[in-house]
Length: 335
Image 1 (cartoon, rainbow, N blue to C red):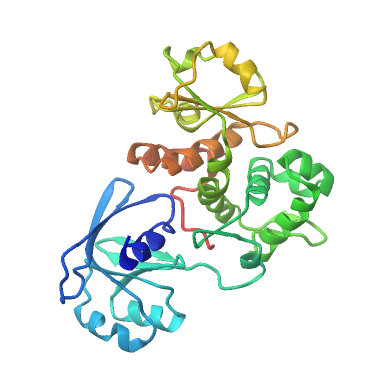
Image 2: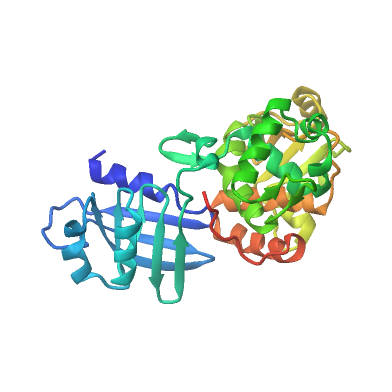
C-alpha cells in the first residue's frame, strides 16, 4: 500500500455510516491536479463522482495550486487540516475529507459538513483504533440503554449498570463522556439534552464498538424467517427487526439476539453452523432489566441497517427514523 492510498483509506473510513465510498486510485503518475484517483460517494441511493487529489497539506502554500483548479466535482483527501486551512478550502470552493474525520463537500445539492470536536474531556475518553476515534464498548451500551429507556438516567449508578450491562465504574465514566459532549445533564435533575445527536452517535458507534464484538455464530436457516422459534429472551435485529416495524423489507440476512445460552438456542433452531449462513445468532449485549419496546427494536434495526452500507437497507432505516425515532435522516455525529 502506498502512502497516498493509506491516507485515502484512513480518511474515507471516518465518513459517517450512511455514506458509502468507493475510491479507485490512478496508478499512472500525472503532474495535473485532481488526477490521483476517482471517488464515488453514495448517499440514500444518489451517487456523486469526484476527481481526487491525495496530498499532505501543512501550510496555505500547499493549497494554492489546488484552489485555482477547484471545481464542484473535485475533492482533496489529506491529513488533518487546521481550522484556518479548512476555512480557506471552504471559502474557495474546495471540497475536502481529512484524516481526522473532518469533511466539507458542496456539490449539486449534496452538502456535507462533518467537524469532530477538538481535544476535550470527550476526546480523552475515546478509544483510538487505526486512527479512528470512537466511543468504547461500555459507553455505547450505556448510550443504547438511555436511548431505549430514557428514565434509566435517573436511576442509581448501580441500577444503571444493571440495565446497560456494564460495570459500575463504566457508568461514571460513560455518563461523564456524554455530559462533556453536552448530550446529557447530570445536575440536580438529570436529563437528556440532545436525543437526536445521541441517536446518530449510537448508529456510528454501534458499527465501530458493538458490532465487531458481538461474536455469536452464523447458521443456515432454510425456512422462512417467521418460522424461527422465538421466546421472550429472543430479539430480532437488523432486517427482520425492520420488517416487523415497517412491513416494507423482505429480510435476507437475519440477526437474532438471545439471552439464552447459544448452544441451547442452536438446539431449538435445529440448523447447522455455516460461516456464510443467513442467520447470525448473537448474545444480547444489554441488561435483562431494560424494558423492551418498539423503540428498542428500532434502535437495533437502524444501527445494523446503516452498518450494512446497503442502499436498500439505508432507505428502510430512514423510514424507521421517521416512524419510531423522531428524525428523518441520520446527521453526522460530532465526534
